[in-house]
Every structure is written in C-alpha cells, then in structure tokens.
Amino acid sequence: MNKHNYHNLEQFYIYPQYIDTYPFKKHLHNIEAIVKTNPTDFFTLNPKTYYFFKMQLCGHPQKTSLVELRKRIVTNDPLKLYCRICKWLINSGITYEQLAKLYSVNNEKPLSDIHYRHHPVIFTCPDCGDDTPYKEMRWVLDHLKKGGSFKKHCKGKCNSVGMKYSALVPLWDENRNKVSIFAVPANDDNLYHRKWYFLCAVCDKPIDTPTTVYNAAINIPRCIRHKIKSGTSFAEMAIFFSFTRCLSAFPYIELNHRYKYYRHREFDIFVNVTCHDSHHFFAVEVDGIHHRNTADKDEEKNQYAAKNMIHLERVRDVELVNINLENFNNLIQRKSRDKTELNQIITELLNRFLRWLSTLNMEKEQFQELKVAIIEEIQHVDVIRDEKAIWKQLNHLGKKLLKDDPKLKPIFEQLREDVRRELGDFITVTEQDIKRPFVCSKCGNTWEQYVKAVVANFRNSKRKATGCPTCANKNKELNAKLKKEAFTLRKVGVTQKKIAETLGKHPTTISSWLKKFETF
Image 1 (cartoon, helix red, strand yellow):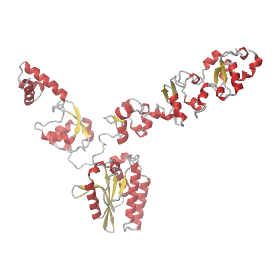
Image 2 (tube, one colour; image 1 turned 30 degrees about the horizontal axis):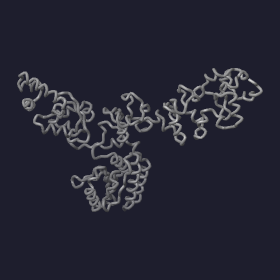
Image 3 (cartoon, rainbow, N blue to C red; image 1 turned 135 degrees about the vertical axis):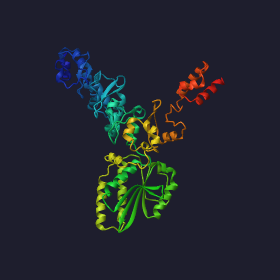
Image 4 (cartoon, one colour; image 1 turned 30 degrees about the vertical axis):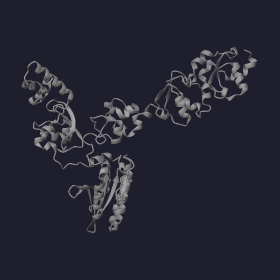
C-alpha cells in the first residue's frame, strides 16, 4: 500500500488487537469477522481488498476497501458514509439506538448481518423484557416508522392474559393451570375457547368448573356458593350496599331490599324516612335486560309510585337505551356493563337522594348529619374494592330447604358431597338459577341440573326417578348399545323378563324395543 495515498484513512480502521476497546457489542456487530478479516498492521492492507472500517457519520463497522472508502469521503455523499443498517434508517424516523435496544442478544446473527427481508430476528420488548421472534424485520420496522410502540408486536407478557386482564391476576389458579397467567398469550384460542381454572373472587377458594378468560373477565369468577341469585344483579346489590353503609345507623331511616307491595309487586331498594311523625319514601329500581318486555308493568309501577308519593329512580341497563317510559324522567341510563361504571351511578343516586332529602321538612341538625354521612359514602364508593362485602351482604333464604324435606332425601343425598357440605344450608327446593352437580345413586354417573327440575321429575315420576339422564334413557349411545344386546339375547331364545333383569331395564321398555326388532 502506498501510505502517502491512504494514511489519512487510518483513523477509520479497526485494529483487531484492540477490539475490546471499541464500543461494539457482540449481538450488534460481527466482532469475530472483524478479528479474522482485519490485519494487525494498517500499512499492510491491499487498497482493493475489503476490510472493516468505522463509517464516518455513524461510527459503526462496515466492510469496504480503502479505494471505496476514500471515494465515498471525496464525493461526500451522506448515504455512503453510513453503515448498511444506518442507511436503512435514515428516512424511517427510527434511530439506530432504538433498533439496537430492541434487537435481542439471543439472535443467531448480529444486527450488522441481518437483511431487511430475508432473515428471522428476535426482538426484546422494552416494556416487559420478553423476546418475540419474527420471520422478517420489516414488519416491525414498518410499524415503528409510524411512531407506534413495539408493545403491539410483543408476544410476551405485554400480550399475555395477565397484562390484558390485570383484574384476573389474583384470581388465576396457577397450580391447576400449571402455567403463569403472564405466560399465556392473549390470542383467540386462549381468550374465547380454551378453559382455565380460577379462584372465587369472594372466598378465594378454587372453583371446580373451568371457564374461558373472556367469561371470567366479564362475570368475575365465583364458586357455586357465591354465584349471584336470579333477580338480584350485582348492580342492585352494590347500590343497596352503599345505601346501607351510610344510612343504617340512623334510627329514623328504614331500609328494605325487595320491598313488597300488592302481594307479588316489589321495589328493589326502598327507603322510608320518618320526619315529624310522617313518612317519606324513596325507591330505586334496577332494570335489567329482561325489562325489554316489561314496559307496561314498569309504567304501572311508575304510576303507583307517583300516586303514593314515592320518589322513584330507575337505573336502566345498556340494552334498554331505546325503550322509553312515558312521563318518567328519573332515569340513569347505563352506557356499559363495566362494574367500574357503577361507582358513578351510585354517586349520582346518592346525590339525588341527598337533594330529595333537602326538600323534606327535616330538622337542620338532622339533615346535616345525614348529609355528612352521605358525602362520606360518596367519597368512598368503590365497588371493586368492596366486591366481597357486597356479595356477602345478601343471603336470600325464606324458602323451604331441600335438606329439610324428608321425602326429597334421595335427591339431597345425590348432590355432590362438597355441595351438600358447603351449600346444604341454603339450597332450596325451588332453586332454578344455578345448575348443581349431582351423582347418581344408582349408576354413579355425574350430571348438572337445576334443583327444581330434579325435584319436579322425582315428584312426578311413578318410579321416583332420580333425574340421572343415563338412568332415564336419555343417553343415546347407552340406549343403542343396550338395544343391540337385547336383540342378541332375544335371537338366542332368552325371554323378555330375563333380558330385562340382565340389562336392568323394565320389561315394558324391553318389550317396546323388541317389537321394533320383530318387524325386521
């Protein structure tokens, strides 16, 4: 090499013997190739042979010749004074530092050797630290060019069920699921199809039946002991809880849940305020989705309230937004079924109750102490924090318990053992809002059914059917198998009575099967 022609380029040369002194990282630059390619003496270089040099504008290694490097510097073309990777990024809005931060140390090739389209790459999410593999770099770069966050492309914790539904983290049963909630990708299969085990949000005990993540997020997992009873929504319970918490200490206020009038008619929440020996009434109706078909009854209740000087407020389900009630304006229309929205609704109801109290002819001191209690409750309304207390406040009994009816003892004893032990004190004969697990006393098979349906079947059956679908000839596969056996036995001359005894069926049933057989 003619040192007089190229000595000024020595400042860009990378000496392999001093490689540790350069700010080059193994996963970003091909240090091994630099050490193997570059001689230890700059003045022994062949001008036309390619070696590694630091590029003038970015300082990153790039393989080029002395001739080509000098040509680039002389022409002063910025595009040619960057390394190959930086040249990609010039007009992209992405800096090399940003890309280097995302490029995982677990990649097989250093960043300097990666092609924009043809090489698989692994990115490290800056938010959660997990690695995400991609077939090509360009898919992520195109997104980042638009100012987007890598979080959208992360397939680690950022895209996990735990990050998407943080409220389910303390309810996730990791022992039975055998995987962390942060290790489960939030894809369609894991969210909507595959079923997982959760802990009860009320008692923290494991729930026997698995469910989907989506269902758990919408309904909040609860064990069979704490599932909501029909007719009592969580919204209704939460509103009653706040009213009770701030008003129950006052002797001149009477609170009722499901206040009855006209025998079977009722108000969901009913407040009776005694003032100067007179009674004033404030009621709240929580209208669920079933009120789509009860507009006439709702209007009758509105008229009854107006006629009897009852101040009535209605909280309407999101599905009722287009169903209007004539001459009634005391409405709070829900915009979603999100539980956190209840905080605003309860606050508004308490404010309306306070304004209603101000219209009564109450003693000033009496009103002030009520006002202080209500304002304090408004400041502390939080249905998520108080969820356990809300669930535990109401326990609707009053009906005949299944365990107390001696004639229904066979049905009660068929309830699964843990259900009898934990729920026997409140499972009623007419319960029909939750399917309970039963174990057949005859065949040992398990099934789930409403208690009311099993009881009705037992009472109406001449042979006191236990409700087991297998024993009741509702299992098609078993019936088909037994029919074949009956036909076979009949062919070899076995009597109908003997076939019935062998198969454990009534002779009448065997007779009906064989009549069909004899027609062939």
